[in-house]
Picture (cartoon, rainbow, N blue to C red):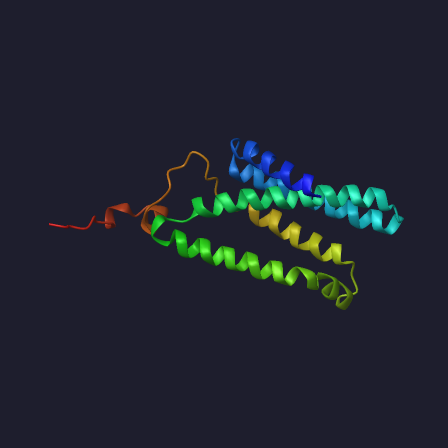
Length: 159
């Protein structure tokens, strides 16, 4: 599985040159298809096939995380970038702490835990289409730049 991590980081670097949004959607779709395939192969009791699907799932999730990590720093204006990045990182870490409970949530809902993950991945793919592309775009300095109201922003007079 460590090979999947290394390959995903290399793939994320090369794919982000084509577009951040495209690579995020692509890697999340790969993870979604792999999660579905792994869930279906569980019903067939095909362990080797499921292991292959889980490798692709790990690849897609890791590459998507690398891409999302880069996009997060490019999405927000400079004045709130560190706070927004910290908030996104905190939510990410809390999600990591909740991940072991997916089995319990699946049993509580009488679903396979992979189906719960599959639902969340489908939600991520849907949301990914709403995120703006950040490749070759100037990073905004002020919130007003994002809104297009730059005539209201006056530079500080330090004299």
